[in-house]
Figure 1 (tube, rainbow, N blue to C red):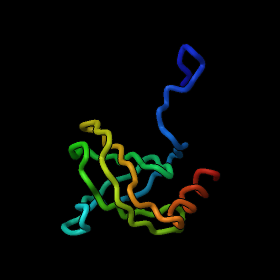
Figure 2 (spheres, rainbow, N blue to C red):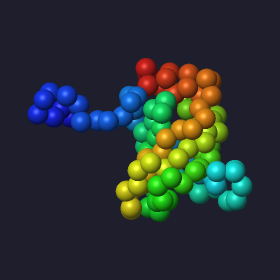
Figure 3 (spheres, rainbow, N blue to C red):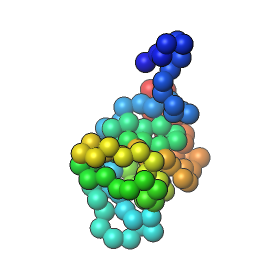
Length: 108
């Protein structure tokens, strides 16, 4: 969406693409029972996770999901929370292979 100056209001630093896939969210150390959720969009910098229960801003997570045919395990931090809808996360340690898999999805 363009603002009054003809510029995008989207503050994201990387383009996102709809990517409906299951994602397991773990505590940052990878322990404990995964919280199953669904990812609704994805970029090389982060994702939006659909979840009725959100976590506090700054919470560190380990995410396990598929990007195309590539299985990814990525550290993330909650940077945006919308109670009853989900949360935006920023990736912390995306590998070069993971980045390439996400870029391939974005390029379609």
